[in-house]
Image 1 (cartoon, rainbow, N blue to C red):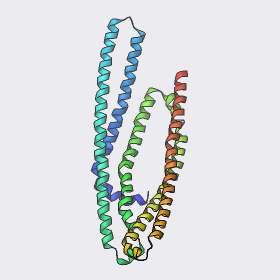
Image 2 (image 1 turned 30 degrees about the vertical axis):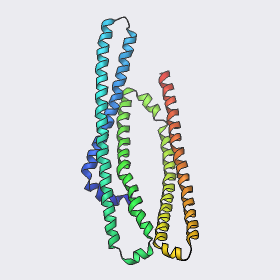
Image 3 (image 1 turned 90 degrees about the vertical axis):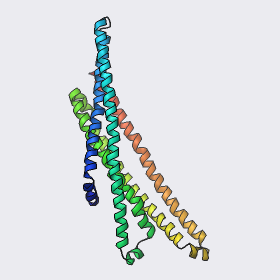
Image 4 (image 1 turned 135 degrees about the vertical axis):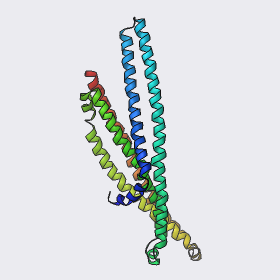
Amino acid sequence: MKSLSSLNPYLLKYKGLYLLGAFFVVSSNYFSVESFVYTSDAIDVFKQILENPNSKKSIDEQLKVLLIIAGKILLVSIIGGVLKVAMRQTLIVGSRKIEFDLKNDIYKQYQRLNVEFYKENKIGDLMVRISEDVSQVREYLGPGIMYGINLISLFAIVFYQMLQTDKSLTFYSLISLPFLSICIYYISVIINKKSRELQETTSSISSFVQDSFSGIRTIKSYHSGPIFMSNYQNLASVYKKKALSLASVQAFFLPLMVLVIGLSYIFIFYIGGVK
């Protein structure tokens, strides 16, 4: 987090976009939850119709109520959809603007550095810094912040609505949360480590290719092409192994989450059925 503090000036520069985006995220989550509340009301109306099937007047009145509820569900769904588009047009656009500023600032810094710096650092590695690394930063500033705000706000709104509906079922539904949090934490640490290793390998490949193309005349003059080709294949092989290792961890992550959440659903349905 200390390293990310250097991005604060950029966030402050576009704080208007980010604050507006945060408002759109919270608002869209509110309307999304409201649609489920109205659905619950519709189920209650259906239940009343089934309990009084012979009362024509009552059924007609209930059908009118159902139409009103259907209209409300349609309205909040449309509003929620518009707000979701708006939140992307603010937060994602804001991250793109910061990416633009970062690349310009890094390029200006490259122009100010002395010759000794370029003797000690590989050009390919510096190219990765201004392209791949900045793109990773944008992922944090855009989707990262957006999904973070979305998760916190959605949890707060849903948790409040759950408490209003049934306090005991709310408690049972949160039993799996500590285990889920521990799994996410440890798997995220592994993913972070493997992603960093993959990024370093990407930098090595980029530096190797840059150096090879810069000295292509020398390589051809000394017929060193097969040697460089072999070295490149070794680097590519290392990259493939690390990429597959990262992909395997990521592939394991989602099914584990689905399994834990699915088991919690079964448990909640059982408790709800018993009650």
